[in-house]
Image (cartoon, rainbow, N blue to C red; front, side):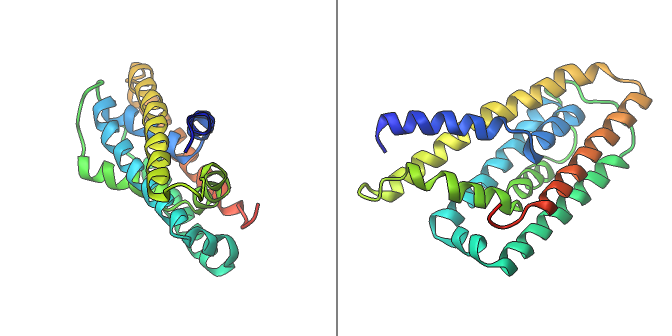
Amino acid sequence: MAFSVWLAFLVAAFIISLSPGAGAVYAMSCGMRHGYRHALVGIAGMQLGLALQLLVVAVGLGALLATSTLAFNVVKWLGVAYLVWLGWQQFRAEPHAVALPGATSGSARKAFVQGFLVNASNPKATIFFLAVVPPFIDPARPLVAQYLAVLGTLAFTDLVVMSGYALLAARVLKLLREPHHIRWMNRAFGGLFMLAGGLLATFKRGA
């Protein structure tokens, strides 16, 4: 990948990461509830999900999701169900005090797995990568090195952006510490997760 091409992809990667979606909601929710450091564990899990999505595109499975209605719908509805379930869990969560930044309450393993599933169960991301990544790949150059560069760039930009979302939530939303404040924040984030699931449900193959 030529340097000029990589710079163009870097800009595209930041735009992709900044776009509001389930990942941003998860990063902010985790930062709000458990603090910035704990949120980083969930964000790391999101990067593993991102790597899986890119692997799917790289080996050609993304083309199957793009052309097979059945395969696409199976993955899509699994993703919808997971986001709605995650939203419901957040919506009905007890209004525990928000953790201070740096706190590590809760299960790190659970945060990692949840972050992974948020990205891995989204076929919209697969289709998006299938449309965005190939134009930046030069088939005349070694493919493995180029896909590693793409993965490194995507992971770097996503870590920066999602960390910013999580830090914002941990530093700002922690000021709302009354139980009724926390209850409404839980409901707001739960609603956003379910909204993300609803939006994913409307996404159609080839849209």
